[in-house]
Length: 346
Image (cartoon, rainbow, N blue to C red; front, side):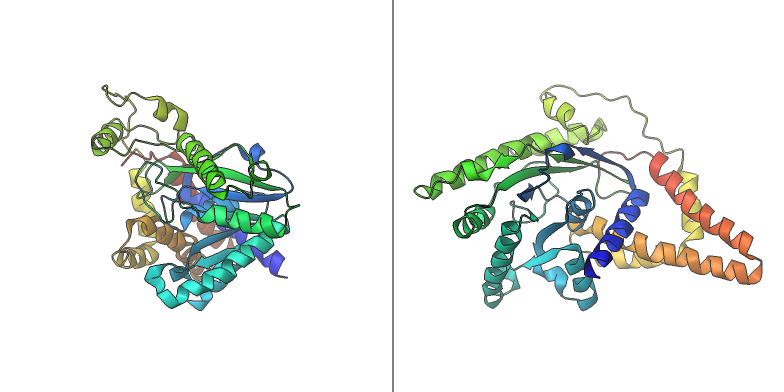
């Protein structure tokens, strides 16, 4: 029953992402091994929307570690658990809570030993800056623990680059790039764990820098990013952006005028109650990296429910045919706006 609920919920979330995102570009899916244990290591620019995007675009069921704070509400915790999320505790959650991580790491080991997949974010936290931050060694601890206790497990690392055109704006545009498989077994050397850790971190880091837009984090970072934003560069074209010489003038003649803006106002008019609730709730979001996550949550829950309720009212006042036409039209307008309106850079 639980596995059925998982796939129903996954289909629901993926459908929501289809209506929410202008485009989701997937590259390198063929790099994911069809068997064996897989540890996905991804950069983390955009809160909970990152693991949701990855989990819904991988055929194999994926478990992943997210910060424990999101599990505070029982209902939300149930659905997160259904999706395969597991809490990881940090110092800010309380020193006493850190002891719970031991059980979580043991569970990670058990999953990989059973040839399951696991997703972690080795940067350790989310951040919208367009560069790969230094990686923690937590993922190597999971690797060593798994292979020490289960030496016959065939274990791979697949780096994943996540790149948003502008995660603060709707509609969203994102690229998921799956890197080349790293067969961990060939790296393991019980006599020199320090060197193995350093080598694995370096290889994952280098792949991530190629799989997402990576602007060197130096004194000129803000200047370079501003130059790209002003040129309205398509950040989801990863290779092209990373090849640009940011010390020269960058021009882009793309027209960013939104001819579909009237359609957006029509959507608001047709969704005035959920839109108002969202605007009120959005003022309470104190981390910009979670803005996109909460907006997506409102979109897939409140808006469809509101359209259905309005359809029932129309059915009561008029007839079923008009109600069905209204319901289909409401979703169609949202879909047209999402897919055809431009998504400018930040």
